[in-house]
Amino acid sequence: MKKTCYILSIIILLISLCQCTGNKKDAVIENSNQVLSMANSTDTEQTNREKAWEEANKYKASITDTTFLQTKDKMSDSAVDPFNPNYAFNQVVYLKALERMKKHLAIKDNQLICNTDSGKDLSISEDLYQYIMNILENWNKGIKGKQYKIIKTDDGYDIKPIIQK
Image 1 (cartoon, rainbow, N blue to C red):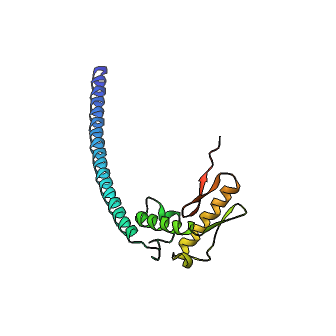
Image 2: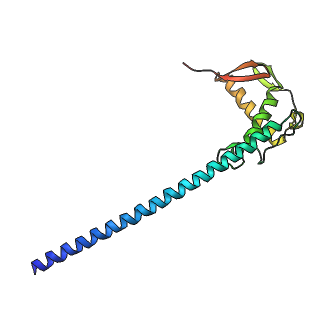
Image 3: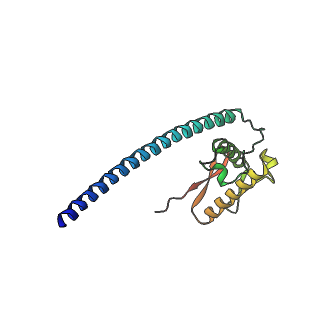
């Protein structure tokens, strides 16, 4: 009886090991398929990203001082987030609008002020204008907090981080 139980235990153990090995093979095959799927997805995403930047750069080349600038999405942090499909276009538009705003900056009481009243003055959408004005407000907070200093540029004013030692 002991011998039968012993043999039965060994058989059960061997069957269990075979099943584990089979499960591992299935898991390896499944993981390989996931990696392949991710690689294909990454290739597609990379191609889409390159195409988006190509289109955005073509648009950038066509922008003049009078081109009305508006992002494809309502301007926000998520509009220029790298995971946004319109990221490249929105980024180009935002940076061009920021350049326009910098040309209208002046200094008053060691704070940057913009000599415009609305997006219309810069030929940009109002949501883009408000977004940039919020950035200007944050810059001024950083200037007050000694995180940034104002610098003169060829096109107006900008800020430069102050490196803390």
